Image (cartoon, rainbow, N blue to C red; front, side):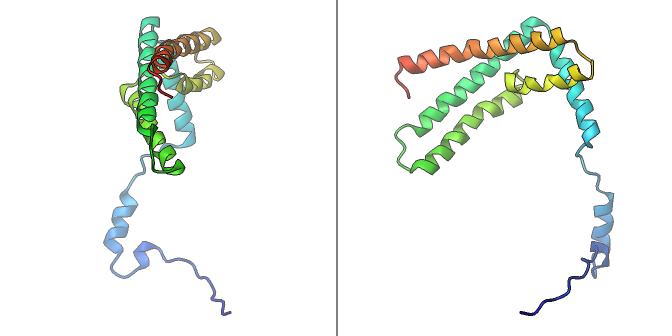
Length: 160
């Protein structure tokens, strides 16, 4: 077995004819945030969510429950009597269910799992504990309030 010695990888600018491309690459600014900036953005989003009025939280929570229920019904519809095999059926079901999550994000509705990040502004004392618990309670029960009719309707229609 012949071993070759690894040398350093040349920079793009050192390659023949790549100088113009290297200059363009050096001018690119990544749109990713530094970790500290992400924490500040998460905190400001949490403050906004925690300071919403009750009616807005209830309506956005009901909307998220509807979207997740819609994704679950679509998943059931896609995977019922599927003859593609276990793995592919699960993959298609997961893709169908993700429609509900995509709708939650696009519509900006309030899903309880996303609101668990409101702990960050509470830990930095930007919101109070009562605001945190109020948001969690309203959003959780709003999500649940729309999930129950979907579950009952699935049982009445004898879907899985």
